[in-house]
Amino acid sequence: MGSLGALMKHPDDFYPLLKLKMAARHAEKQIPSHPHWGFCFSMLHKVSRSFALVIQQLDTQLRNAVCIFYLVLRALDTVEDDTSIDADVKVPILIDFYRHIYNPDWHFSCGTKEYKVLMDQFHLVSTAFLELEKGYQEAIEDITLRMGAGMAKFICKEVETVADYDEYCHYVAGLVGLGLSKLFHAYGSEDLAPDSLSNSMGLFLQKTNIIRDYLEDINEIPKSRMFWPRQIWSKYATKLEDLKYEENSVKAVQCLNDMVTNALLHVDDCLKYMSALHDPSIFRFCAIPQIMAIGTLALSYNNIQVFRGVVKMRRGLTAKVIDRTKTMADVYGAFYDFSCMLKAKVDKNDPNAQKTLSRLDSILKTCRDSGVLNKRKSYIIKNNSDYTPLVVVMLIIILAIFLVNPTPNFSIRVGTIINSQVVFRVSCKPYFMHILLLDVVTLA
Image (cartoon, rainbow, N blue to C red; front, side, top):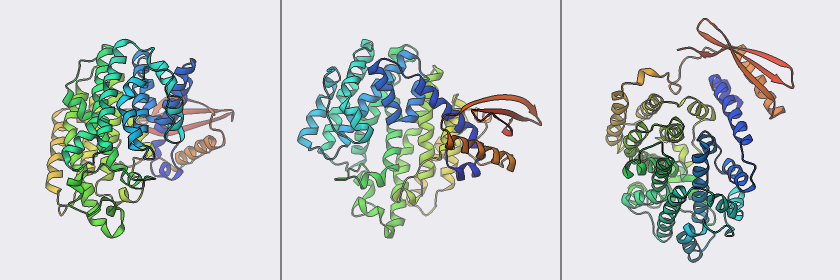
């Protein structure tokens, strides 16, 4: 439900967090009863909880295909990521993985924690895959074949140039964008998007992850695997790992800003891709991760904490993104707000300041030219809160209930409107407590 300190600072996070928690429980209740499908959706919740939520809203046929697509590629990625596997063992598995998905007896033990479970029980994923329609199977097979070959190539190849960086990101994420576009088209609700736009959707997410995960990846045991291109980081350090040391903080941040500026190249393509979608559930499925990416970049830019720990959006803001991303106006608004946040952090003395500002100005212009920025209320830019101390106390009480009993029976009813403010009545059982929350939402 988010930390108490975060809720005290951002009490308007509480309602979206509560809705997110309830949605997660509802999604878990929708797990199919068939053993192989039950395993797949249970595993999906374990390896990507937020991704599972956006998948659950898709129509059943498409939801099943996307779930299996995700798990197949997650398994492939687990093989690639396991640095304890010798290259001469790993490379053939990556290359042949597209064949293994047709074999309900195949599995390979690697990875850790829930990823090891996925690999040990991969035959259940294959069983579910074989029940998909032919069009979905062909799309998943094609992307798995191409991705496995690309991963195998980079097992023995370093990311030296920016071109290498784009190629690697294409193999591990751009192809995911192409595959999803094929699944959407096979489902029948979307036109087949241009490959260049689909590729950019994947590259934007992947580059954000590579930037955010610097410290985790550089400290990987038994050996690190890094994907920051030498062409960029060599301008700031002799060795990539030197950036994590305090004495190199200035150069580390400059390198980070260079990486973020590179990722911003893909935003215009992403906005074009999303603006062409028709199905509301597919739109949300695509839009929510993209907003999370631009938000993460805004937080990461000029932030030395990328080299010290984990930088990510607070859970309450994530809940707001999931709750309030419904239309393209919401997407333009979020990209506009996060780009403004990032622009405010640009230091004119940064070596790439002008390039960064130019790319941000292009994004801001695209958002303004949409003509819909006035059709949404910002949930990113901080506003004065209308919360009273009493409401904050009420929120703490409800949070305490969740800590004591993770599965209370909550119901929320919208009551009357008083002075332009919605009144919610929250009932909580088995505590037989009724709490009246005022000022939970101020009407626009």
